[in-house]
Length: 187
Image (cartoon, rainbow, N blue to C red; front, side, top):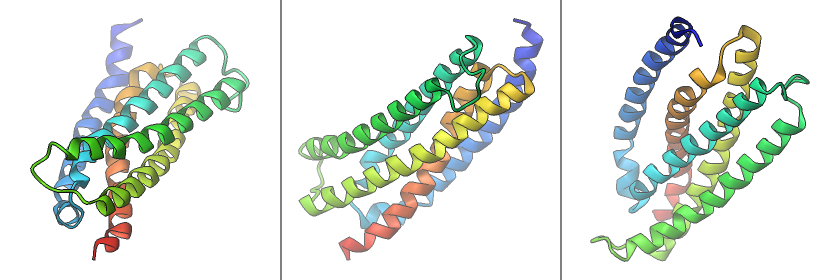
């Protein structure tokens, strides 16, 4: 592959991802009040953010490979995309259920006490955030692949950084929304 083409495709995307990462960090810092209301919520933030980036980046890579192999010639409604959609949603739901379980196990070793009620509310926040952000990032992933096909760009050059950055931002916004919505259960 031409080095210049890779540089032209990736450099602007990476620059925007740096800005997006800074925005995600700023947004996380503004959530301090929510973390005080819901003890233990901060513990699941890295897991939820990492889950989104890992699952959807893998999806972007699989769809990029399918594009290179010519399996997406029929468009984004092929069996390949349908199966990947099902797998991504199943994995998102499963991991969203497992995260609160690990919080419960981790809480036994933390110097703070997290009540069973808090664990249940955090589980609700984790599941709703995981599923909602999965849907958002699935749309972004399919959009990146469609964009790549239309403009003859290698999706492997842009999908990973874009999906992890958009995943961080979207997941934090969605987490904040559901934490605000369900945070009243603590009052």
